[in-house]
Image (tube, rainbow, N blue to C red; front, side, top):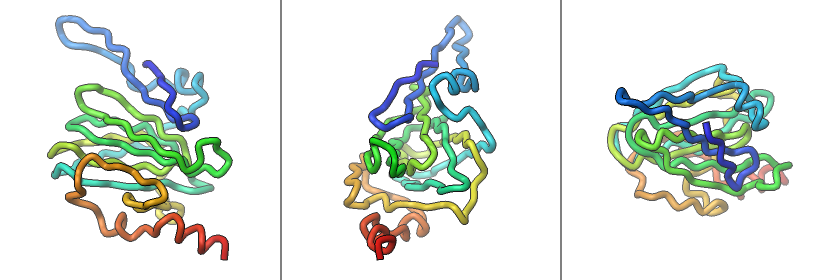
Length: 183
């Protein structure tokens, strides 16, 4: 695997090192030793699969807070997504910064998302499938979210949103959240 640093602390794009022959190719998609060597949490507690019917579907922006912060390894196994992460770690030098990476079934690329980074994606084609390897278990009690269209982050999504859950529309804006915390 080839680990490429992003502008966010401890967030990596992971490309496969393919061994090709007349049958196709073989590649490692996960190795705990290689992840640990890059300072990443090499624990997989849960694997998730999301299938999206329509181009423009948006899922996110989600993260979990202590004591169940989770890191994720996200890969698109069918179709194409535009994957965005926002650094929500107050002690990070990249706090409140975000990146977007295109993941496709063809490029076999994955994105490592550190714990306390909000994650979301938009499908760029119909019938898109996304696989997540997660370092901890899902907990609705510790789940938090941000609006996909929050002006604090000014994320430019590639397409108009065609589908989004009511839950994702209901997250408050980041500035509103800060005002509540400071009161």
